[in-house]
Every structure is written in structure tokens, then in C-alpha cells.
Amino acid sequence: MALIGRCLRVALAAAGLLTSLSSLPPHAHAQDALPPLVYVCPMHSDQVAHEDGECPICGMGLEPMRIDTTYTCPIHSVVSEREAGKCPICGRTLGEITVAVAWKCAGSEKELTEPSTCKDGAAAVRVQKTLAHGNHNPQHGGLFFMAPDSWHHIEGTYLPTGVFRLHLYDDYTKPLALKLAREISGTLVIKDSKTGRDKEIPLVRSGRYLQAPIGKQPFPAQMYAKISFKPGDRDNRFDFSFDGFSKEPKVAPSTTMTGGMPATSSAPATPVAPATSPPAPDLSSNVDPALIPVPIPETVPEMLAQLRTRSDQIRAFIDKGAFAAIYVPAFQAKDLALALDEHKKELPDDRQRIAVPAIARLVRSAYLLDAFGDLGNKQQILEAYDRFTAAVKEIESAFPARP
Image (cartoon, rainbow, N blue to C red; front, side, top):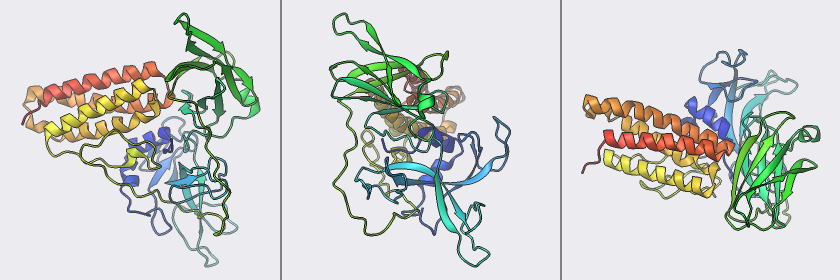
């Protein structure tokens, strides 16, 4: 899924930066426009703030940083394009990642947060670097999750040979070093076709990944892995649901590079706002659906109707096992709830006492759905969804639909 790294995106949302990123005009990420400036902990990249200060976790001073998005190749990280497309080197589909943007003068290691003129009169050169959690795109056509430790990342694939393979990555989505991969162990749990009971199959390490033979399973093929990332650690559960066999990204015929290396500046394709009552989000696009603003209806009954639609979409994604997609309708539901909050003064006091805490619970559960969807634990997702639906019902009781 070609989306901005979700754990970093949640931090940006908490800091109110998602609106800034999504409201930039077309090609606003070019040299003549500045990406949003935020303050980030150098040790904990999920700690993002609008203003300078200290990290609430480690106490280190926050560092200024400009956040942008770019499209890059899963194989050739040197590629950086402004819009979605194909890698000019190997033809693979480019994935959207999050990067930090800075400017440097020749002979200096100091990073500047805005375009500047150097002492020699030359313009500072724009540079960018990948951020931790900036790339949550599957690298092998599988299902991608982040571990609860917020450092390890995994990707599960189901091969036509009947093998389940678990790829292991660090927080930059780079293949895990062999020394660290050797510390990881786990089992895969599937339904025994004869008894209907859970059957555990050891995951055997092969180089930098783990795998297990599971044969041909009926689709959707549902299974879960229990993974320990260090000897003696507790198991972490990751649920997988495959609609078909995983397919490695295809390599297109080689192309000739006529323009040299791609530009270092970037800008995502121009988002197109969907209709007032859009269908389920299209996650095949290279534009992050969560960054496309969905128009909020003008009337309370229409808001309530869309809230129910978002709830149904979340349920459908859970049933399908598309946990990585849950955050889109969850965040859209959060926006609807905040819009309903603007109408709370229209309610009598007794209904305000129902609406206000219910809206707060829905917003909280939307962020939990996003976070647990990132971790791939179905039980946690279902628990968060129960809180979400309970909040929806309370909101509906406080804002009765009316013509």
C-alpha cells in the first residue's frame, strides 16, 4: 500500500499537520514552496510538536524539521520523484514515503530549515533524507505491519508454492541485519482442514526471513503469526488475510534514462475530492486517501448518515482482514464527529451531556483503530471497534435524525 508511514502520520495528525500537508496547492512541494515546519525528537520520531521544547519521553531538545512526501523505488532508493509513476531504473511502481527536507551549503554539514544564500553567494542545495517510519509500503506484495516495539516491521506473503514467508525490517523498512534476524522466532497458526482446529507450524529462519510450508489454503486464507523479536520476549500476534497469492512487484522492461537522475524535490499527485457520499476509499491510488479532504455535509442527519457509512466501511475492512486500510474511514469518521461537535449547542443540556463525551470517545477510538491496524492484531482492532460503534450509537441518540 503506497501510503505515508502511518505511525508518523498519526503523530502529525496529533500535531495538526495533516491539514497543512493536504491543503498545499498543486506542486507546492517544489523549490519555491516550503513544507510544514515541525519539531521532532531525535530519538523518538513519533513525538512531534508545533513549537520548540523537550521530548516528553527522553527529555532531549526537539529539533526543527520540514516534513514532505516523495515517491521512490522499493529497490533504488536514490530515485525521488514529485509524482507517482514507475522507477526509471527498473520499472517498479514507486511508493510514497515521508522525508525530512533541508538545505546545505558546500563544505558545511549544517542543515538549514529554509532556502538560504551561502557565504560564497551560491544558493544552498536542497537535500532530503528518509525518516524512521516514513515508509510502510509492502516491499514484496504482501501485508505490512509495525511491531508493538515501534522498531521492528514485518511483511507477510503467501506464495503460490504454498509457503508463508515473513520478511523482517527495521524502522526504516530496510531488511533486518542477519545478526538481528537470528534473534527472531515464531510460529504460524492456521486452521486444520480436517479437524477445524488451530494448527501451529514453526516458522523456520532462512537468511533474513522466516517461513513455513502451509500448502494450498482456501481464499481468503486467514492465519496469524506469533512472533518473539528477542529470546525470552513475549509473543506478538499479527493477523493475516490473503485474498490471493502474494505477487512480487513486476519489473517493467528496462527504460532509458534521458534526463539524468530524478529531481530531489517532490510533490504528490493533485488530490481530487470525492463526492459528498463517496464509496469505500480507493487504496490502489498512490495518493494517501487520508490526506484527501472529504466534504462535510451541511446538515446533522447527513453527517449521521455518513458516520454510519464510515462505521460499516471499517467493519468491512476488519472482516476482510484489510487492517492497513482501516485508518481511512476511521479518520473520516473522526472529522464527522468533530463537525457534529460544532452543533452541540443546538441540543438541550441533557443531550449535550451525552454528545460531548461520546464525540471524545469516538475521536479516541479512531486513533486506536489506526494504531492497532498498524500493528495487525485483530483482537485489539475489534476491541477498539466496539468502543467506536458504542460511541456512534451514543452520538446518534444525542443527535436524532430529523428531516
